[in-house]
Image (cartoon, rainbow, N blue to C red; front, side, top):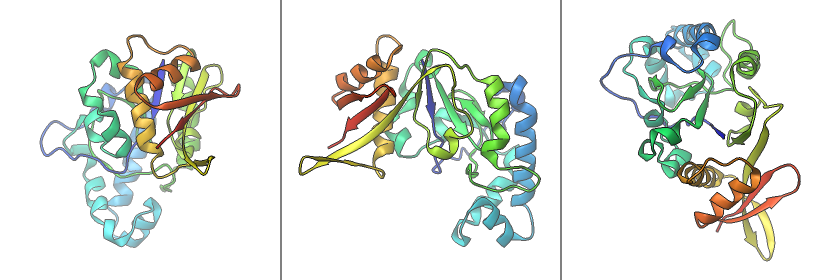
Length: 246
């Protein structure tokens, strides 16, 4: 079982510790050169005197200009395990640092900057979305796609909890892919939820990583979520798990 997580905009920024070592990150052989190029482009863009243009390239507002200063110093910034760096809604529900190391080994986190990282990979806090436009780097999803296709395991069961932009960077072709959607019920009709779907996905991921055995089938995913107290329905042949969220 492989669980693919999205990154989060919210991040913990450690104030001490050694900086990132690119050769120590997951899939270094396939991804280090690509990571070096994106990191250099992000630092160069963020350190530019043309701050308005830099903000536009990264999709940031004037009130987020401090993110440029952080990005400009990334190569020497303190790093910590990715499981601690990402702190958004999904990660609040998942509570990844609490889980056993063997469970965390089933997780990869998508990243516009790093391609993917493992939960234990030491990285600094950064700001770069998959929709950003960096000079001399093509669209980031397309930029990462060939390298990720070569690097990532495409077999068994993949539980894909990424958002659309990050999913576009790599689509498993041979693995069985399970996605998670969230619904509410109103007047007997289901309504897709968007605001709370991250928390739903975090709960499902935690249920899977706490299960006695790794999931091997879509049915296993649904059963693990149901055991965690979620109302679950496995729908269709697309191996999509529909969660009925209160």
